Image (cartoon, rainbow, N blue to C red; front, side):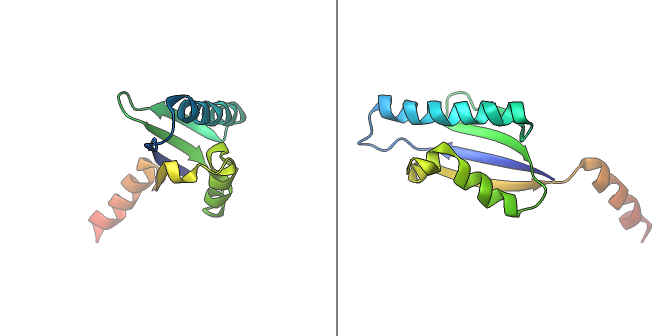
Length: 105
């Protein structure tokens, strides 16, 4: 199943730009490795915002916690800098087939 992750990063007031961007750099390296491994299907950085949109493939929702806790930002103790929103994605073709049944009722 595919899941959309909307990640919003927040730079703490007392954190230097150097520290903030070094943490993000570690996260980016892990993300690009996950793309190579096929776990991440797509990833985008929203221009002008500290925001990343990611589509990941999971076999079950249980993997969501595994993914979160494997992220460098969590492992390094910076989880307070990010808000994640997870949205399950349904293939539109499946919805279109469902609509056929709904419209026939």
